[in-house]
Image (cartoon, rainbow, N blue to C red; front, side, top):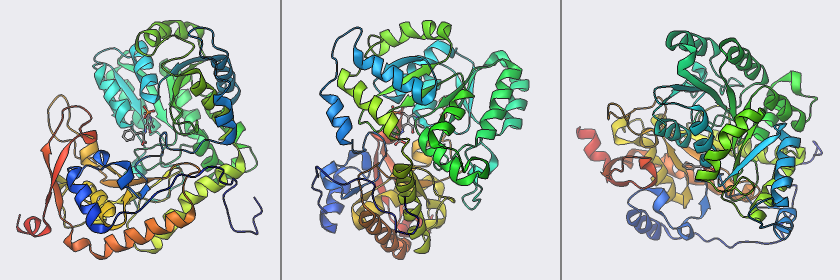
Length: 467
Ligand code: P71
């Protein structure tokens, strides 16, 4: 991109999808009808949908073209060969098991590697990852560097694993009790923060020292690599493709949700270096996902992912995409909105504790803030706080995470900076009326992944003040 000109989309629209903004009173009705759970809103009632960057990207003309040549054979599909080759070319892992999405990959990998009573160490485990680890009767240990828990700490690689703590943990429980180390790049739950290549190399050395498998959750690996290039002077001259390869060269394999940096609307895979491990994993994949050459996907989906994996490495695309998230972050900061610093690769995280100081953690301030942003501008984010963290399955106690955040995740190639301006203005209005925003309480609380389907009722601000 020409540095002297302002940034603009490195693509143009060929197809458009109309969206509309409801009136405020219509939004308040919709919110009530959705039981104050934004997952239960109709997408038609959302103006700017920042619930997730997962599966919400716009595919390119090449991806749409590739759909037409999908091979729908049950076995031996050439679309699988294309996907396998793309994964090997981009990530460097030769063995690929397609899955319907990222959690399918987690299910297959953890069924292969994780036994009851074991631990899986990671930076901050994503919620589906944690749930799948617990589903195996194991425990997910978050061992990210301390900086990730401080929203003010703007260090460049807050997604890093604390290798010393991980080492002490392994010494403590014994290496046989640790099924694998899984580092998520970028670290979604911790604010979309990148992991440095140096940290991945240190994790590799740790894994070798204890003879423990080391995997990446690589679903945002291109964004991680772009941020490495931006923030680590040692990588300024390297291509994103080379950085992605270097990151992956340090791991034994990865899980991958193609709904993120695969630029596809569905899909995922497990990728592996070791043929013996592939053989152990393959029967689980057939059981849970489908035959090894389609993995719960249509042949056309495999084609879309294969093309997307190559497109996502484009420097102009990443500069614009990560730049858009950074512009949103800067605009919100300038409006006085409390944020997690620095901007993540795919999302901006609002600090609900500082935004709603008068709402205690057990009244779910981040859930209340997410609802308020919808009410004020039709902007849908997602709670990443006490609601999503859930209860400890062993004790039944609320986990009370250290951060109460609202994530505004930006879909890829979908919204313009004008949309981002609306988001900034919405947050400004919510901030101006924050004293009148109360908390939330559960009316219906499901036991697994409760945030998707729970029902809430608002607690008025006046009632909180009395408590
Ligand atoms: C995200 C999602 C999708 C999501 C999940 C739960 C609530 C809301 C939205 C999914 C991830 C992820 C990482 C690091 C594995 C998965 C599962 N993220 N690892 O961030 O971020 O992938 O959705 O394809 O099954 O909005 P899957």
